[in-house]
Length: 112
Image 1 (cartoon, rainbow, N blue to C red):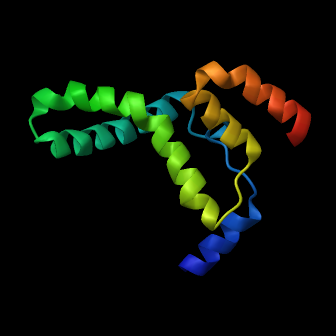
Image 2 (tube, one colour):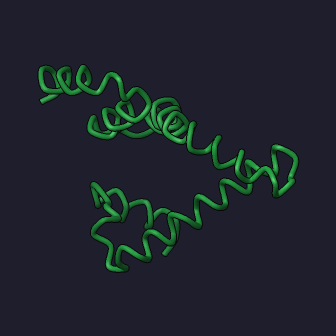
Image 3 (cartoon, rainbow, N blue to C red):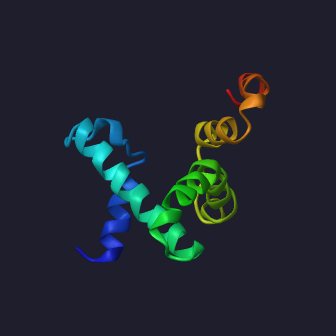
C-alpha cells in the first residue's frame, strides 16, 4: 500500500481509539511506557547524557507533557487538520486544572 492509499484509508476512519484495541490493556500500557521511556532518554541526553539525570528528565516530562501536546495540536496540527473540541477542552483541563469548571461551563453554553 503506498502512502497516498494509507492516508485515504485513515481519512475514511474519523476517529481511532486505543481503548478498543484488539491487543488488550496490558499491551497498551507496555507501549505507553516504551514511548515514555524513549522520550525520557531524549530529554536525559539533552541534559548531558548522564543516566543519573533520568529522574530530572522524568520530572520535566511529567510537568510539561500536556503543555507540549496542547502546543503541537493548537499551533502545528490544527493548521492542517480539524481538531475536536473535546480534545482541546481535555488538554485545557490538564494544563489549567483550576479552570475545569469554567471550561465545562463554557462548553455547555456554547459548544453543544
